[in-house]
Amino acid sequence: MTETTTTSTTSTAGKGQPYKIVSIERSEAPSGTEGSDWYAYVIAQGEHRINGYRRGKLNAVTLAIEEVIAQLNERRFGKRGRVNLVPTPKKTAPQKPST
Image (cartoon, rainbow, N blue to C red; front, side):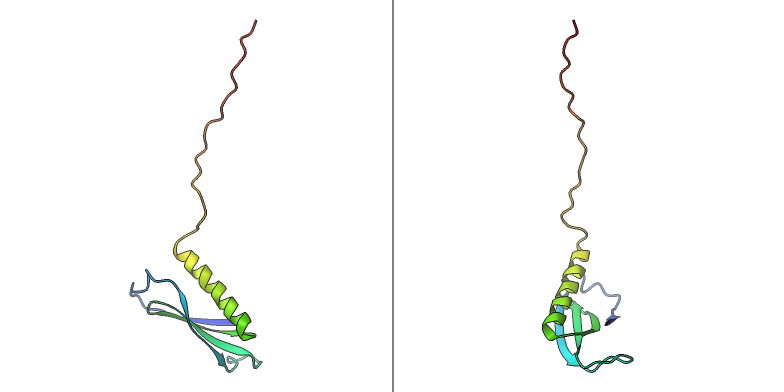
């Protein structure tokens, strides 16, 4: 289970900066949940912050947050690896003269 809250302003200060991990720290279970293996994390892009909770071992939580960051950064630039394909007309084989 993952809980995430977003804090944002209307400033454009962070638009040119990539998302990055600010911190991942052991935490109490969020309200309404159980368990003792929770981590609180903060992701930032400039002055914009995303605060969330993730349950699991530290290395698994870190990998999951890094994957989220990679996806957020990919979204900033649109889809990559796509080529604007332009169809070319099919070549026709030379026709044999009829006899």
